Amino acid sequence: LSQPLRVIVITLSANRATEIIRGVKTKLKVAKLKVAKLFSRHMKVAQQEAVLREGSYRIGVGTPQRLQRLCDGGALDFGGAELICIDMLRDKKKLNIFTVKDTEQAMLKL
Image (cartoon, rainbow, N blue to C red; front, side, top):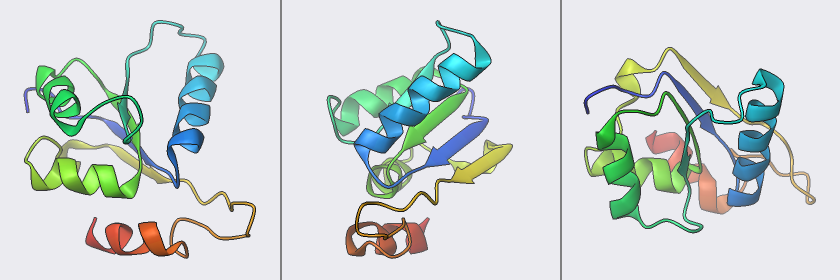
């Protein structure tokens, strides 16, 4: 890693990740802000690893499963992060990132 992500947001789903990315750009009023999209929709793991190794991103938003894969592959390191935010929004079934079976184990590993 040339420059680690400074802010990492962990969220329940790809849909929620895109909402967060849009919200961050709107709130910060920085349309060209580079936010690493670290979830399975649209990008393969190898592409995301290349983006992270490039080192020009300071914010990353992703799902626990994908973040875990990127950590396992050595492309992502939480050690350089200044802020790690866990999105606790509940889904339609009133479940959150720690209570959904698919994300629970990945969260515990992270």
